[in-house]
Image (tube, rainbow, N blue to C red; front, side, top):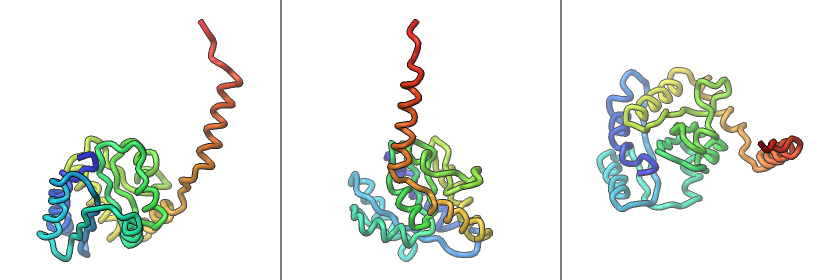
Length: 186
């Protein structure tokens, strides 16, 4: 539920069917995850109903996850909440443009399309089928109709740094500022 898997079937049906109307090309999806049995069954059902367009893997394998990201144009992360999130950072290194909920660590690590240095697409909460469809449509339109801008978004994502060094430097800087002017007691 946290990752939005319960909403995904309707959004994918739309994308694999009428969602791509007016755009050249065809969508395909790869799903991976371990979790509650009902959601694992959902992944298998999606694959069976959409042979050749959906591939489902119910489990988790870090090596496969990276191969998947390296071969994708987009990665969809419609999480309802996400304290940190690592896949969006790994995906960025491969040039897989992230479509994610604007929540927690996803919002902190993905710059939405309104930013001149956009690195992905943000779905505004609450996560709904309509919000996912809107973001997918926007991403597909960019991919098919404006490949130069899409490639710029990929480059922006790939140039992002998620290393600890800058974060530690900023943390130390904030500590020094706090020590220079301690809070006044009433």
